[in-house]
Length: 470
Image (cartoon, rainbow, N blue to C red; front, side, top):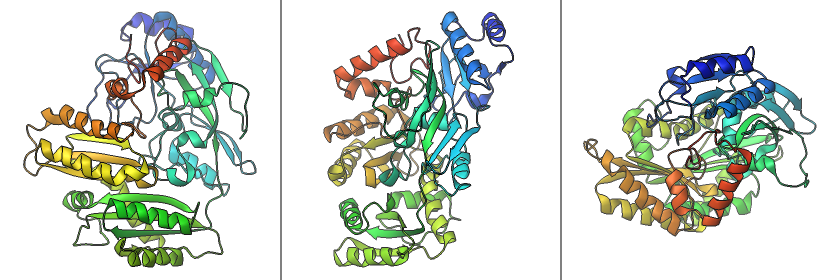
């Protein structure tokens, strides 16, 4: 493909799309949060309208220049960064408006460059909730959230980004415009192109706007941190909570003692509810109930039942919004503490719920057989999604990076043995292309390649992400 630093292409693009903002990409567009992928020289396009996006894609197709869609840059699998001299980077940050806000139909229509926190605030302004919740919501953009089918902490109750999307407007790899911003809950008119584009990571086209589902917020919320005996007890506690409060559990997060110890090491200013102890396993539970129900009483009843059943041995129920926020602050800082400690290998995986405790035990044994490592296993136990991260033993940071591929392969083999997925919510990007090829059904890969060829015949859309570039 043509080097985008070529001034001839830059000039032809400027002529093809008059008024388009073009400049050399700054450093923030050329790296990802973990620092594992770095781009070189690249041209940055900043369209403001759908027509400008169409013009960019068509011009890139004619010149066979690869296009990397860029959202908030928060992705963790390298999907937003082309190693080396990058193709054209397409950022929709100037397309960030709320096009429609419908509290009666519970729909908000936003452009892809809208920041997730701003979409949440817009929904709140009309008494509604947009329930997609991520630690990076202050910088993640809706287009990227949909392109990666982001999950987050509220999947148990509200689903992934895919489940919150009613329709998309998009420009496909051949320049075709998909005008699919209907606000319908039911539409069986042929293939579901919306769900094809959601999760495609910009490899088929670029999402420019979306119709998103809002919900009425729970009248009353309750939050608790409960110490559990082990992951099996956490799973049984979840079943107990669901039997008592079906449909009202917003989040159920598993936290390991190693994660709390990391927080204590690098963020000692954070107050932990069970200090000075770091319990081996705890869960963060959040519920949302109707006005007539008392969430604190419901959580107290759950604690008592868990205590009597041998599942729980300690707990704290938030008595104020400040205490609730403090609990969530601990959870949301776990990934930040991980980065400060420095993981050798990080894994975003999912396994069937029933197999979750056995997976944790078996993966721990496999990692221990490879050497002296620390494991921080935490995540969204309610939907089977764990962040399984492996760290060097204290004082042994040097020389362990070479083991990354070995550890990753070993953990992913265990995931596959349990019928799980090596990418639960972060996507494939460039980091997991080989994993996709290794663990996916051959028929699925054949179908994916055929779809890619049909919707992106020039192979210009985020080449090398999800599928290996030709």
